[in-house]
Picture 1: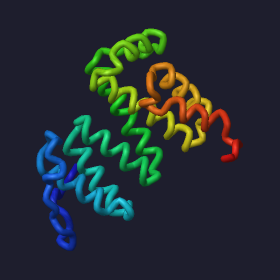
Picture 2 (picture 1 turned 180 degrees about the vertical axis):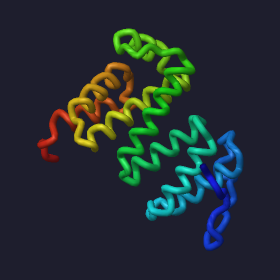
Picture 3 (picture 1 turned 45 degrees about the vertical axis):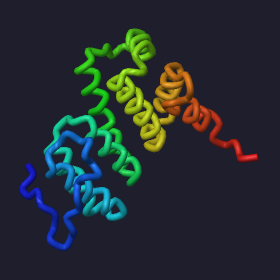
Picture 4 (picture 1 turned 90 degrees about the vertical axis):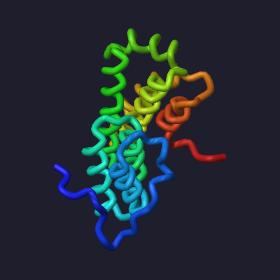
Amino acid sequence: MVTSLSAPPTLAQPDSDGLSWYTVPDAVKQLLIQASALWDQPQLADGYMQQALALAGDHPDVLVSAYRYFFYTHNNPLALQVANRVLTLVRQTEALPDDWTQLKPILSDRRDDPEIRLYINAYAASGLIQARLGEVETAKEIALRVSELERRNEFGGNVVRDILEHPDDEDE
C-alpha cells in the first residue's frame, strides 16, 4: 500500500502540464514525472513508478508508461509483467479470444482501432522483452505473428524477426 504520495523534500515538484492528456489524478502524474526525472537512478525511480501503478490501477496510459520505463531501464521482468497486464486488460475489455487462430483475424481487421493498436504494440513489446530475457523461440513466434499483422512495419515485427533470425550478420 502507498503510504505517501509526496516526493522527498529534496526533489522539486515539477508542473504536470506535460502530461495533460493523462486522465489520472495529479498525484499519479507527479509520480510519473518523478520516475522520469530519476530514470537513471532506478533505486529511486522504481518506487515512484510502482506508486503510480498502484494508484492508477489498470489505466492504459500509465501501464504503457510503466512498461516503457522498465524496458528502457532494463528491468525486463517488470517490463514483461506490465506489458502482460496491458494485454490482459485489452483482451478483457475487447473480449478477445486467447487462441491465435481466432485472434489473428480480429487483430488484422481492427488494427487501426486504438485499443487493438495498444494490444499489438504491447504484444510486440512483450516479444522484444522475451528476447532480452533469453526466450528467443517465444520472441521469434511473437515477432512472426506481429509481422503477419503489419502493413507498413508499424509494429516492428519484421525488424525484430530479422534480428532474431540473423543474429550473427554483420553490418556491411
